[in-house]
Length: 482
Image (cartoon, rainbow, N blue to C red):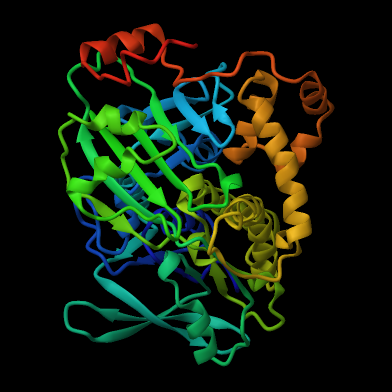
């Protein structure tokens, strides 16, 4: 990476790419964003290059805070556009692996909205900067340079198939899960890059519903998670409010327990979860979309920071560097934190000869917590396909970590101190090492402070809504417990 007087090129116009462009614009004269989709829509729209956008995306509080630091006022914009702030755990009726979770006071939160709304809002903010230009309907097809230094990118126009070269001081691969950076590196003579894969085969099926008329005011999210200790395919379901007076309902199953893409089978599959509450809630709700499925869900991680001959001038960010099982909602948090690392390193060290190495080391730290969390959980499921050298995923180490997590998770369902600690880790608001805090150990020794719940902890007001909607099972047999 050379002098700031030269330009930067960002490959990929999704969330990661736009955040990277915003950061780079503060350090380079020009930034060009390249994306193969048409990004000229006047509002949030699905796009071909991001099929997973149709599925559930939680913006955890840790990521929302970073986004606000990068683009002040962004979360306020999202809420004004209809995003719903859901307190965790108070705003979510949750059946975790360890039982029904008491809805203790808020420890963290999520912004619940469509991924299209997040991407559109960020894109509008970023492209308002005159230093940033967009080449949409244009596909990146390779890199310029050599094994020692990348000096730009080669792109192909969708309109006529012609190609062009875009010289740059730095190229950022933000093309997501579809990244082919390993192939591009081989084409310029760079050595192989280590890659780890942990793949449960999880499949998502998602559908949007109109919020029923019997919902008067706010209604909580509902989550039914699998019990990873059962050694059978994990099936889960999530119902969350999003903009436009809609519910997004996402069902998933690991290898051997996948949901189908059949519209008629959607509610039936929801009824096979550990509790049928989601099936009961949507039984008479009006579907607004067909069922959309996705199998692009494996945990994959590149280790460019370990490569001995990684070329100067090339960075990989977001899902292009590390992608996670979407169940944990860590993708957008990691994208935001990765952009913050890029900003920090450029501010403190400038665009010098060691910048790429410094950024890559910082990115590795950012993705590691999410990687460790997702993979340690996912290897519990049958038929999970693992190709990794990560010592933490050996049976001995992974087993020890899970024992501690299981102990805390069991107690957290009934203890507010442990719930706060656990949800801070789940949302990436605190590192796993925070479990070593003496207050956590004291709460663990003290044990549960609340009784075990036998049914979903809806409030009295929520139960009244359910009864007005004649939701037998969800309304008539479930007592309030909050």
